[in-house]
Length: 79
Image: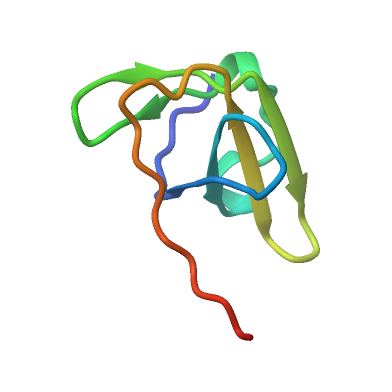
């Protein structure tokens, strides 16, 4: 397997349970969820349970099943 790294940010989406990692498609490529690991700032290593990715917009979202002790980044609102 190819090992690479990139960055992402922890976010929550209104109406959706759990935590998500917002990153870029080029960071994860076509890797299935089972081959992706996420290294958190506190030293924990977690795996996503779901991956959504769009190569055209270069956006990827990784779903996390266990969000214990995680804090989401506040996102702005254009309204």
